[in-house]
Image (cartoon, rainbow, N blue to C red):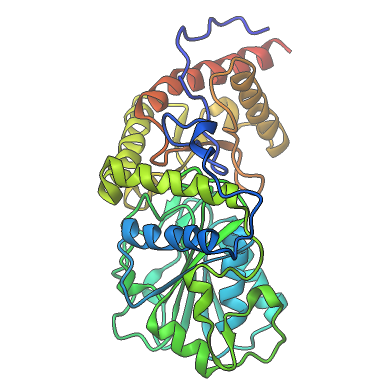
Length: 390
């Protein structure tokens, strides 16, 4: 047992996981009572609900009407792999990476697709690569928000309007919480389990007219699995973008995501979703500014994520330990928070530097974010006391 007295109040909802994320405020299983279950997703009503997800997503996010939006297999991972395997290789490609998921896309392009003409623009956790080095004649692959580093691109100004290449954006922890300039993006992917707190399995993909042109004019040198195929007879398979999914979706998850989209509309749409997330970040920033043991992992406030809020521990006691000891201290802090039901899933991502990560998306209430912060102070000081006594 620790010697320090824990805070008196806990968050009403202690769920701060960065995926799957907290459900919308007020959610209960009753929201799913009208789910289209035990029926074919290809039935008229099943297909209509899938199409409703597509159109409500387009409306809330402000995706242009000439973009194709579809539901695809295997979450954001499947959606982004689908895009890369279907369209990369027509031009040279610039790959941006500054955290785990971006690095994963680099690995896939370099070691699986084995493209001969690629450039890697990389940065350590906490920073961004030099975006001015992007060559607009080439394709560009990047994450909008680095979920495991808490570092995001500040805007889309670095993307040329007259680019010749396509931009491929993994936007899974950015959409519904950040303003995406769709005119700068040719391919965007995301999942349901992030900012709107949906369930896993399903991915979303949005294609610009330029991306569709690439699909219809370019055939990759490698074979494509069925779940990656977006064309039929050399033309875009438009049925995918009207609710005719490639494989069988969970209609229970579909109902849940429709509930989240309707909630987003009811509270004020994208501007309100962004405001709620920004309020969570501001709450953490105010707390960090008054602490000397913790800082943001993101070095530049302009690139600081409002969803995956990543913190590094800078206290001399912690910094003076080796990596194994730091990881152990982090795990102990996380365990204490969970034991006291004060905050769940607050550890850093397994490939990231030891620290803490708070999900600050729109489904997290500002009051809960404020309530968990004193618990972080308590957990850190408790671990220091424990280790000193050991």
